[in-house]
Image 1 (cartoon, one colour):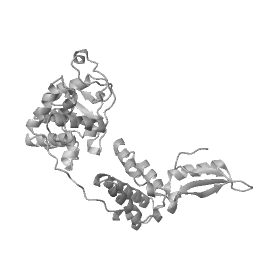
Image 2 (tube, one colour; image 1 turned 180 degrees about the horizontal axis):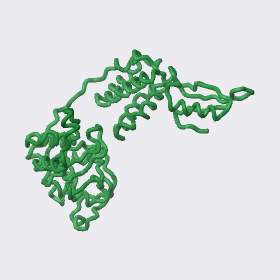
Image 3 (cartoon, one colour; image 1 turned 90 degrees about the vertical axis):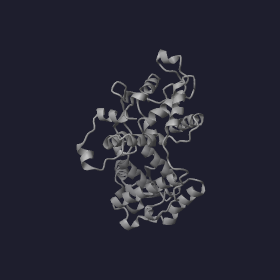
Image 4 (spheres, helix red, strand yellow; image 1 turned 60 degrees about the horizontal axis):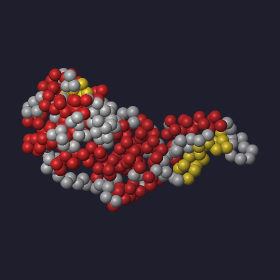
Length: 360
């Protein structure tokens, strides 16, 4: 029976044996025999239980085994994009995947970070890799696979963050230049300029905005819902739509596709918009890389120097300067509310959220 990669295998040994069925698994780069059984079904049951309960492995558990078990629990609590980031960081640890946790040294963990640094991979990814190490060791301690004092991930150092420049919001003149592109239907950059202004007037994270579904956009009630977010406070939140950018939402809603913002290979469904459409939309969701490329083109055309995340800074800055309700601002941006009264007992209505966004 062929098992999934990393799951282990069952082998029937040759000769006359009382327990011919052996359960094997790769540990430290070598196949290791873990147990022997008289019946194949008993061996299979053991292998299934092995992959459900890491304690069976004891001190033989490898870094990859611990990561897989830990992520089985964690995936239920985190967004898909966060899980993907963990998987990417885990791949950077390939040199220690098949090594037992009890045999690993700080030098081996640190060498992964040093290799990343030497190849030009900076603080953000190094931080994610170190977090994966933390998660693996905490999981092993939780299930008593290693002693609490055996957590050597706490000794791993990473490079200091390098900030090229401080985040700055759009000013009025810059946004007017972007708006001029958005309102010029003959400009091929017009739809993407619309999307940028939409982000400035609602403050989502770029990754959140690109995953908004058309079915979650309600033009009459003037709001859309963000289902997935990197934080618990940001998930399933309602984001109001400003009256000033409602026509831009109407444009994107008229285009093909499941997501609100899509790529550029088709045409809008609305016949009235079809004649003036300068960007084609065939309905495929826009990846962040594709969005970033188009975003930079609009920035060059409008003589601005901003990042996609600075649209979120712009919205937050405007809401603060206009004196918007603080709790409404946190709800719009998907920030955690620390105050017990505000966080549990106070519930801003959609009308209050719209009132706050209409101040912009």
